[in-house]
Length: 279
Image 1 (spheres, one colour):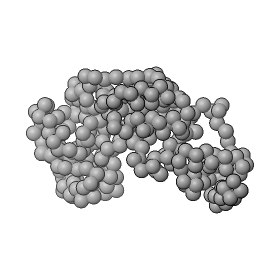
Image 2 (cartoon, helix red, strand yellow; image 1 turned 90 degrees about the vertical axis):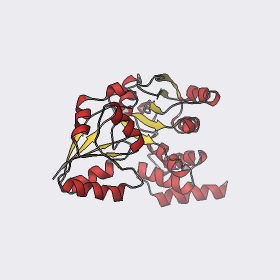
Image 3 (tube, helix red, strand yellow; image 1 turned 60 degrees about the vertical axis):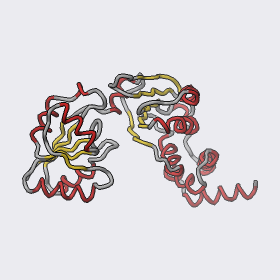
Image 4 (cartoon, one colour; image 1 turned 30 degrees about the vertical axis):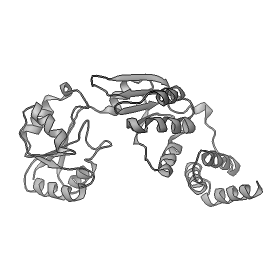
């Protein structure tokens, strides 16, 4: 039986490629790549001749079974993503799970991570943090995600594409209020930039200046002293109404607040409908 190696690759600067990562990619029998064209450039730079296999979110099931079969027959494989650590908001997680469930040894060859790198230079608290990845483009899931973490006191880390940044900052201002934020873009690349500001200032700036490059958003956690717990159904209903005022459907808001407070979703929804009728 072979081994699966989870190999981290540079997030921009090829000088961040480790010696162990190069040696591992040279010595395995094949490499599973998110985009074979991107990985081919990396392999060419380091003169690595190992064959590539396409493995991404759209073919994960079929390709995963094929990869597993080859590993079970004795071949060693590596999985890489286009940049950074596989499995972290990138393909690889299903393959690791599949191999683990079938008794295959999975080993990690650590490399750069955009999330941790951004946190380190953010100037915000690093003692406790939550990685939240990308927000959904679907409004319902997007608003539920923001509502779910709005009261989190840990530093929050999100990924965002440039064309969605302006809308995301406005939504974050709406849900989180005006907190400190560090916007880290093009980390380790030629135009690396870290802007330490507030959410409102960032929203205003990028409404007038077109964002460029991939962003990591590091956001100050909620101020524990300002959190208002829901001690009664009336308190919980106020939180429901706040979410509804921000665009969330009533039923979704009731479900979200019920989950956070322990009050009945049905009771909150009945109270919401009753209040709407009276108004």
